[in-house]
Length: 383
Image (cartoon, rainbow, N blue to C red; front, side, top):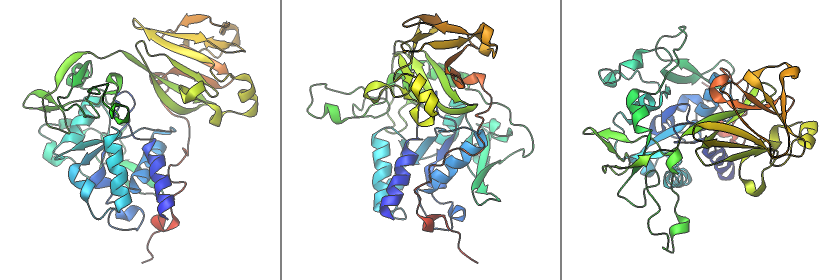
């Protein structure tokens, strides 16, 4: 069972992100692990995070939905979790996959406001209402509860039945996320800079790139490292980014970020494991047509371009037009600047475009992170 739980935690890890461009919701892990009614298991289990992530995927009808996880430091020594679970959460923290804070306070709600994402919680945020009045808006707080099929579902904590209003980053969030921040603690995974590159341990450290830095905490009116409580310094403008989605046969399979001067290759299986690999979602015919590295996306000076680097060519559908007569074919190494609604077509039904173009992920039952979960952890107690 320990091996199976470890495999579930590895699958969960792939869905963790503190990248403001990718995170789709924020959670307090110390709350989620105690949702014993979801599986009828022991008092605390980090595997329940997988159940909630699956519920978010179904709610958004999208595959591979990333979640921003906040961890109160006390959870790292909570004996209601197994030693293996505590070790894994510490590794997530050290690798910058989750954010650790000394005290939770309203950090989860602060992140949600700065990023414009919902909070997955069973609380109503009453204690924060004076500072965060948006908690009363429909869809901003989503509670994980048992569904009729036995799988958890998300329901609006406030305003059930009302259409949720799309959330946006707060103006303060926009300003904070436009800058790169540095923590005086050189080993800070979120806001560190790597310290001495000649150190024998330099290659063992994990640091979040400036493009993907999480939002600072605001303490006493100044940007602060949420983990160390130290004042951050402004290290200059954050590189611009575009968030793109891979959409295959109407289903959004993955989101990814193209940053200023950081090109991204998309293809069947880009070399060296870098880039966005599509092979696992392609039909046999599509695999034969799509090159290992098929199209190169570059962002420079605010212009997003697509360059064909394939054997068979890359299509551009201006404005997302389905009309084949309007489709433009890029030849080998040919580049085109993409308009806001343009869609890049690698093969029929295999498309890449800006994420905000597609309102739904298009999948009823997203792939679960719980495929390797031990049966015992998921079985309800008979009453």
